[in-house]
Image (cartoon, rainbow, N blue to C red; front, top):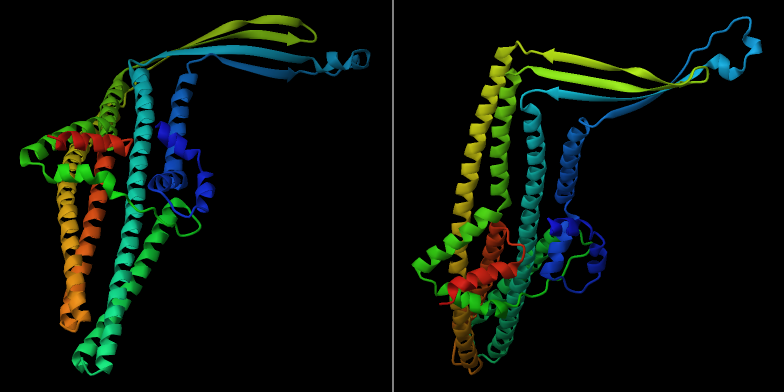
Length: 446
């Protein structure tokens, strides 16, 4: 919660970062939090629920009041008296206190107000981690788009080089027309892919800019995957038993920290208390109001007035209405229990899915990296043969396509790994990514 309120006080950070050449992930997260209208609305909802709780308490405090009354009497002697005597202002100061007994309904109401405050805070935490996850995904999408554009640019350069060699060989009669046309087609296809990658990068830039409130398209800082190397290798080597143990450990953390699950539990408590509140509706209500005070007038001076004691007893007779209220409260309680169960099951499913995907992507990153390395070496070999006129355009095209597909698989697996890591962080409500990484490493180091 401290981070939530901190984020809401750093709106000026958007100005600080707006002129930066690159945008880091931490900066994107802070900007997304500061720019979120949902989080700002949650903050107001928390303040409102806190105010409602205090307002309920205020009604049990003594109620002071003050009034000024003027009773003027005009007669033939009015000219002989002062204006103050004629107006005869009377100042009345009074205080009253109401004490009521309605079984236990007041205590239940106080508990409900406290639960309402906690639910508003948990709702704010839910949105806090949702926004963090959205910022991560938007940032990683932009990083992936930038890497895809770089890959497309590299493929286009290869196609242009191939075409330039093909033109020389075609002009000297060393290449048939079919191979030359294929080189032209490869170049046009690569250029079209590059243009599409540019547009995709612009789109992802707009998405991140809208989330962070930046006026210009941000340039993301490249993700340093060397920092994840130990984690990648450890996760990829996990056995089924170790994966199961890691899932149990993550689930325990999520069960304690996940704000959506905590909010569902609070809703259960709220519905139970509402049943108690509705049940107390059958009980009679006894109230007593004691009031006293002082009078001051220009004529009579200061004088106390007698205190008043009002007693009242209210006995409800609309039992059918009370019974309906109790029945409705029990139905709401059962619905809340189902909602909690649904939230719990979804949390378990989403966490297990995210963990399995994280492990899968970790292995894919390592294998794609090796595949890309082999594909590059194979391409260099085929390119050299092509330069020496010992290979066809088709062979070079196949080698170039292998490099591109291997590079794209690596980019995709890296992107998937980061997204899965962000999802687990949201589900486990980890305040810092380092805490999640440490937990994952503890399970992967044997």
